[in-house]
Image (cartoon, rainbow, N blue to C red; front, side, top):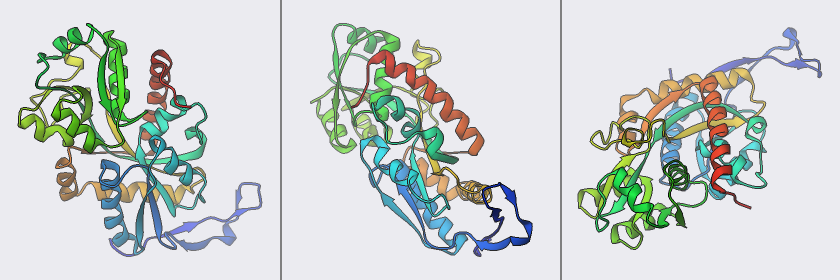
Length: 324
């Protein structure tokens, strides 16, 4: 189906919450171009999937869908902009789960309340991080890495406060009992280059940036942070099976709208996104970026975010991670 979709929108009488059936009218959605705000840099996983959705949905809706990158503050800048937008479905957000699960505890004064600022439409895709070490480091397993790290604080690279690499290492060192010196980078490109060059020797990083260096022997991949072996690197064990049962960290990409989005619009978006993500060519495209399509509906997405927020609140308190 490629024609513009129409919704029968009920007009609510006054402030009573009673639907005035006699005033129902056909309202097209979308009525004008839709903007998808991505709270990360161009070229990142959430950006790529947002652009793929925009391309497919624009044809299905018969409206232009534009993608706007508003990155910074670990996703807070873009998320805040969407939270303050009209809740009519014409401004949407694609962001990492950490915007909603981590930032409210990580930041001393978060600019929004995820529980009251957003309506979660769906989960889109997921990615994992890999524990990597420079080839000069004499460790070849998670157990050897932990033994090495316990000799003294290790410096490790991450993409900034609240990013997946930062969170994963701090969570792991809390469980394994070693100390760290986090070294933040402004982007994954320079981070991967410095890891490959041995200027910094440790990190939990996205697989795409380091896979060529692992193949070339400059880096060693010891484990992935996902709960199960990653289909795109099945030979690499998980942290959980390497002596830390229950350890799991996956990044997932969330589509959200400002709270107050009408139910019919939310349901339409949820269904259209699910159908779009089922396309085999889209799934293959993201496998090439070391991401996996992982659609989940609004209810499941909300429950997962709520559970993860509780987990990270405890981790942040225990590790002392805070951003003013």
